[in-house]
Each structure stands twice: as structure tokens, then as C-alpha cells.
Image 1 (cartoon, rainbow, N blue to C red):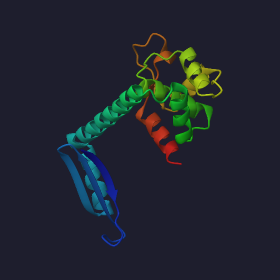
Image 2: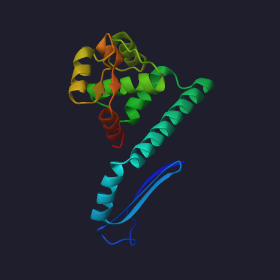
Image 3: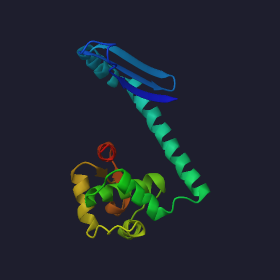
Amino acid sequence: MNNLLVDHPVGAFLEDEARVIIRAGDVEIDLSGAQSSVDERLVRIRDDDTWSIALSRIRNAREKAISAAVEAAKAAGLPERGSAFKSLIDNCNLVKKPDQVLGAIHYLRDVEGINDSPPRVIDQLFEDSGLEPPGNLSLYLNRLKDRGFLVTPPSAKERNRYAILTPEGRGHLDNKSRY
């Protein structure tokens, strides 16, 4: 089981005290004490293999959860592609077209497992969801790359067809979904 807990319980610590607990399989990181001490130890942990192993396990668990959800949705016959993408857009509060394009790349790659997403595929996804297609898709993709939200593998022949979300791009979508 993978858990991530950043804990600041009321009354348990003084104001400048902190606690960080991360469990990923058999890897456990449990830090508590003064905020500065916890920050210092967390920086040291992030520099060794423990942090990388924990993050890798958390990513694997996330990927398995997404795969299980996709399979369950396919088995149940729900949801239909357009409504699923529209739900992603609505639930993550993606109102700006660049954010929607980033969401589309995420949806196609991580939910449907489609790595090759030419403009017609992205446009069709928008149309299926009842949203206005992006129009000049290359412009949006280039701007998202400039912001560090997308990359293209060097081996890709047609660079805009194989865009991949960076950790910053995933973080941006995560931040949007919190509001």
C-alpha cells in the first residue's frame, strides 16, 4: 500500500514542528521534529535512492489504478468517450483552451492509451465532448512545450503527434483540479 501523509496535527507539535510520512511498499520515510530539521532531512533523502524508489512505486500504483479504472469502464461500457473527456475538463476546472489541450493529451495517452495523436484525433475528442476544437493546435502545443508542460520524444518523426506530459504538465493539471 502506498500512502503519502504530510501531517501538522493541532496540539501535537509546536508551531514550528512538522511531520512527513511516506509509505510506498516496504519503503517508509517518517520524519518529525522542527520544521528546519525535517526540511534538511527531506532534502538529504531526496538525494538518495530511497526517494526515487518511493516515487517510482507511487507512479506505478497510480498507473495501475488508471489501468484498472479504464478496464472497469470498458467492461461496464461506461463512460462514452466524449462524456468521459468532458468530465475530465469539468472536474479539473480546465476552462482555458491550452489547459484543455493539455487535458486532451493526458486523456488520450493515460486513459485511452493512444500515443499517436494527430490533430484530427484531438479535434474529434473535443467534438465528441461537445467542446469547440482548439483550432490552431500546433500553436497550443508549442506554447505548452515552451512552458515545460509537454515534450516530444527525439525519435518522433512528426513531433506534435507524440507529445508527452512532463511532470510539470501533470503538476499543472493536478493544481487546476484542486480549485
